[in-house]
Figure 1: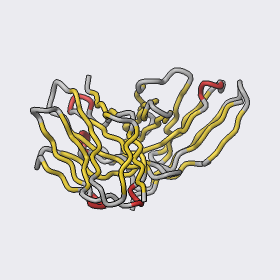
Figure 2: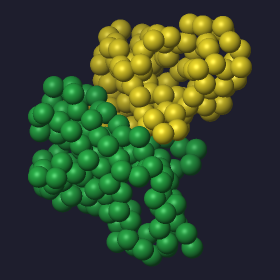
Figure 3: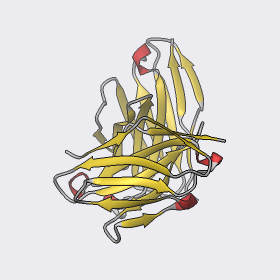
Length: 115
Length: 114
């Protein structure tokens, strides 16, 4: 079974803090994703990585950056957290072999609260 | 650009009743469609996906969906709801020109009443 783990289930941070969200997958997947999930808005893609050190902006990259130094790990960074970044953050991975028909495998999510 | 619209943010059914969750897509190229389910306090997991091999797709837990090009729809059904089906359901679309990425709908929360 593919396993995607996220470093924290719940996180509380202060406005202006630098925040790191970590994601690790154990299936040697090429692709990794960060989404944020808000009620009524579904999942919105923040960043996508298709290889080590390769990244692509998603639909809502403003205020976020990412890092992928190793294939299995994809980090989401909030350089200066703001209250409007309070949300559920979901990490996912996919093999990259079938591309358009790839299944995405999701972690359990990190619920971030910025005070 | 591709998109999906899920009709009804909340659907409530009685246990044993038919489940019907609606998804319509928009795409200028042939789409590939997915249904994911999210149980409380968990990430999403794949229920089923349409990859053009067959228009009627069977998934896990008794769910199925039918791709109807003429109606640009990919509705999810289950003949008899179970209490354990209570969850949030997401429809997603992927196209070759945006390979590797999917666009998700806003989600439909299914409530199952005893």
